[in-house]
Image (cartoon, rainbow, N blue to C red; front, side, top):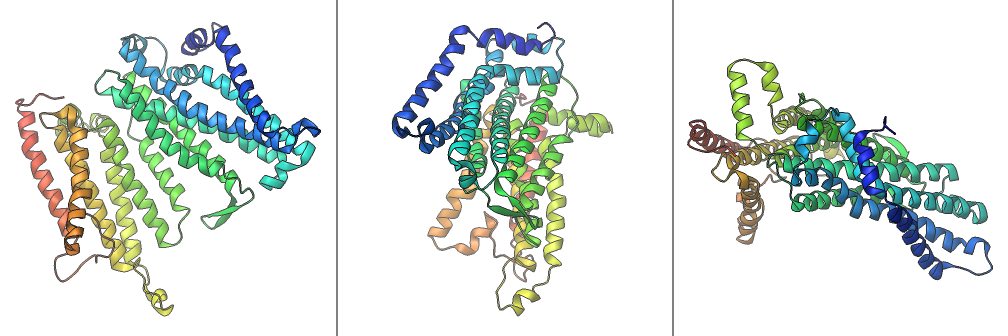
Length: 473
């Protein structure tokens, strides 16, 4: 017991009281009785196939609901509660390393939920076995051997739990890091974000079609196996991200390497669903959109930018890499991806579409021009976030930036569309059917002009900040 992770040991004493250990199976048992009241068939083995299927559904659905509504909140609250209770600084000064603190917090804060999830998982597996043994329902429904369904259910549900809880803890820790204060609002926001993303992922895993294949990079892969493998992969990345965040909290130097690797993995994963030139475009778009995540979560820090510029002035590459914002690294990677995608599109052959009698809009100029314009608009957005962070209301920079985005991407284009001024839309949004070059005004010139204007504004505001007339947030 003394060799157990100290953080996990502390949570075991706090969370697993005898009363709670008894209450959880009683609640699950009550839910089983409710299912039995609806689906029990007298005279049939173990209550009939409907009851066994209902119990299996209860176990898997209850697992998901318990993780999303309770486990996610406990995970997000783990560090926020420590910060609010002013005990987080003491824990950071302990001898525990980043990895020990990471898995101790992740497993310990959700240990009671894990206890309930284990009971629900056992209910799912036992119900599936009985359903197959007595009625052959598993193989008929899922069109797969019993062992495969059991492995998919166990591995998929566990990976789903790790993904959700690690992600929500990572988001909550990042959100409170810059303020050094914890709020329940941060917990709620992190939980809502992860729930929205998790439902989209789990919907693929819980597909009851069974046996269906999807095409990924030209390979026909079973949907359920692919969903389980994807959950495992993204869960591993979530834990790695949480560990890296914990290293930051413990003042351990992090090189900006893991985030670009994750973005490349996500782009590779998403591009597999497209074909031909579209795969390159999908990868570029994923990398480009991923830049918003570190920019929004960490938000540009003027003090960090000052240290970065100081290191660059002194030609200290090591220090510069340490303070290099992840969104800037991501955006440089996106530039390379967009350039490659544009070259691939410009080097494509539209002759095939013409011979087939099909008017193609994803060929040479249109797709390339839209992609370049898209990159420039994202550049403008990120620079506007930096501009907002350098202002007097730096702590309200994100809310100000969100308002600007709503106006630029929502209100103004809707007004122009209502007035019939569709030709003006390329000034505010990347429109699909625009050429890369034209003899009039190239549409990519509009976002480029906005980037130059925002850069000038940042330079003006940075001079005021650097002279000390503005207090750094």
